Length: 480
Image 1 (cartoon, helix red, strand yellow):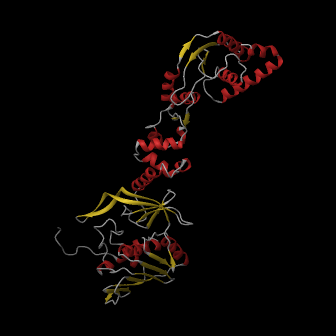
Image 2 (cartoon, one colour):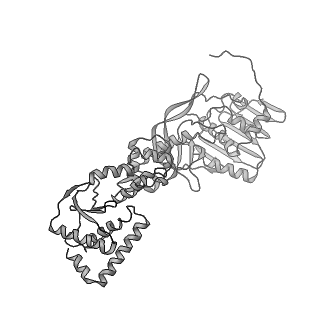
Image 3 (cartoon, helix red, strand yellow):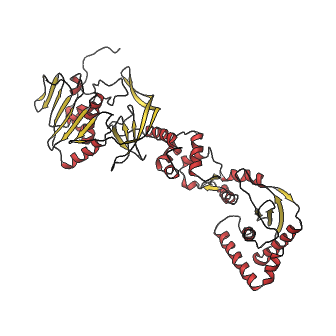
């Protein structure tokens, strides 16, 4: 135990006033409200007048030690993370911003005025009454009321602001036993420790923006669509209106894991707060798998990044093979890296599918030989190209994808899958003709870009015109 010593320091009233005046009136009044919560009050009232504010509660004991009213950094809450205050500053900062003040509590009344601080006996048997002499504007009071009405009073506690009861928002979800950082005092030293607590998500009341709360006291706005109340002290900045970014992320990650399966649909999962978690928090692969299954279509792969030029062609080939490309440009770097733990890249997908879809080369039967001849004729007539035709057999992969044809631009070989839906006895069958024209368009480019689309449209239009001008061409192709 540290030996008691004589006082070393003095405190500047002017410095305390200057610092406290930087905080909005509503935030300062929350200090008095949360003190009443911690003291076990069941009724709390705040009345805001133009030159006087009154805060009154019915806590059983009131302020147990009168020094807590005027001694900066003295606190009776240091050992309990489930009590809101911890610095011994809040009430003193509130009082310091007033021209005059009176604190009536059990055992003593402390008056502050131009002549200094004065103590007298109190007749109160319960609770505390603060009378704060402070000139305020209509706008300042309106903003203070807005902050105070944001409070979520504990169950069974009635909070009135200017005579109006503050109603609790509707609870959406309660999560017990959440391991989160809190603030505890060990041997006189304030420390960050991990401790199990409860999170409660609420639907914001009409006109409210979602906020993060500490035991019912609003702390900061955030981009989660609900109010979320943490059931213990949370790490706060000096002004007590902001949490460290890592803590907000931890709360968001806890919510995402709990709500992903039952509460969030695809639209919800595209919200910025979810991306924050995916990109910047070490989430489990189980959560990533569940996220991917809900937000992306089956068969999704990661597209090439801007710097990975070798994989750009793989994106297009992956599309040909039936994959859905998750565009790298639509993801933050952190999200791309995280999703890479559970999704293939397009290049890896193409490499894997190349071995799966290579198929077994087969010798054509008579019908397929006639079909091969018709394809070569069609390529010469409308594409001005000489091609070779081969046949292979390949079955659908595990995702049910079946490649019916492919074109090797370099060797100018067009290959057809005999296990597909192609009609080798009728090249003019709509599905079959579409596949053939698609492959012939690839003779100018392996990509599915504007050149490919323009070429495919040209071949289809030219074929229609040739068949209209020369009916024997249609007969030749149909008789394959």
